[in-house]
Length: 320
Ligand code: MTE
Image (cartoon, rainbow, N blue to C red; front, side):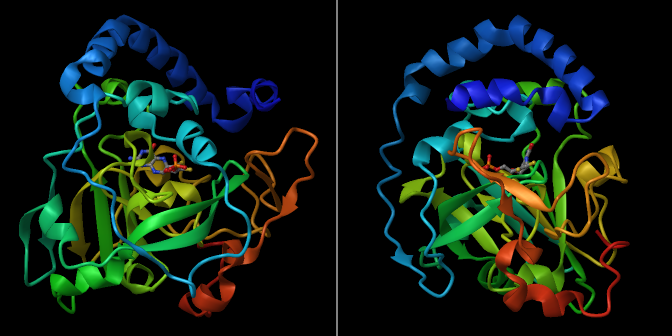
């Protein structure tokens, strides 16, 4: 049933014309490199789960969790957007199997007293992990409810002591076209870059994520470190982060560069501001069938109490 529904929504309905065309070019390139990807997947080193990555310990954060029932692990790990591995929803799971998320370093740079390269272990060590069940709303008008595991980005930021000039935080994904076949095509301006205003980054809802459903992040969901900003459209939630930079100026971000009239810097979930090619008033919860009624999209994805003050006095149609 689900498969039928996915066939029902064609890629051209949910991606822009140029991206659709790029996708076809990309698929060609992917076919050419399929044997390469296959080799990586089959290699012994990559096919067995990393033994050092034991089952993580975490506590449920009740204040920041929903009562709504979650999507399945299968939904969350097979219906993905991660264009570095392809533009179809099934591509990230299919083509990221050989991706090496260890060893991993994150470079902290810009307007902060403490800068430099840190291993993922350094990044994780002082932060107790918690689980939070968040709504996740993609700009394509579908949504899921997912138990993420991570820690507040604010706690991480505080460790690096941003200076008074740090007005924005900019995140960068790994750039590695050998491992990420999508980066061999000009689908986006690689590497993927996203940014938040510093007060958005410091909001306790903003989560540095390392796992889901009590397991470490699978590659297709952005291993080993990604962002989740639950009141914003999913494209802000950048995956496989290798850089965190504090800046004075608002950064240019990948989707905003690709289609500025469609993807604003703020990207706050807003049922009153339509995407130029479709309404944002409703959403389809993944996992239902195509007859399931669409649900009403909530302002700020249901997190208005926690975050609406961040945007007081702002014209949200202009700053979309
Ligand atoms: N991060 C990178 N590096 N590349 C991407 O293509 N896609 C974004 C976001 N982060 C993307 C990314 C989009 S559009 C969405 S909806 C979410 O990841 C999807 O996250 P999920 O696959 O874990 O649901």
